[in-house]
Length: 102
Image (cartoon, rainbow, N blue to C red; front, side):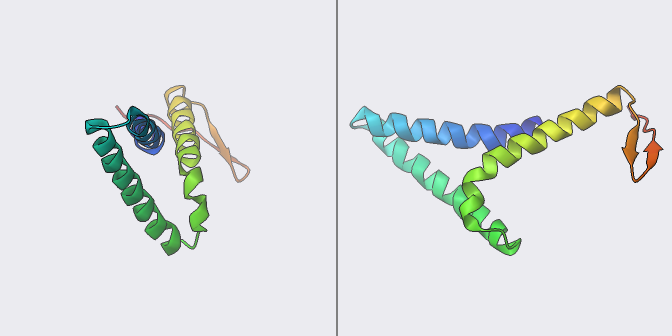
């Protein structure tokens, strides 16, 4: 869950921040860093576009990818907490008790 949060939310935010800092610097190394970050954003968007097209999801939803990553990470954390606290899972009219494995 932490890795999903870092890669799905942290990386795009860091890229956009670095791009803005490089563009605002006005010259030198930071401008070239901004160009490199822009290429990184483009590469990430291209990879996501390929996956989205394969799954027949509208490509315009790429901008919502960080939100989806945060929601999935939250769901994984909730599931891990439920497992650690040995809460039963209710599904399909039945109750399942799961035991964590060390």
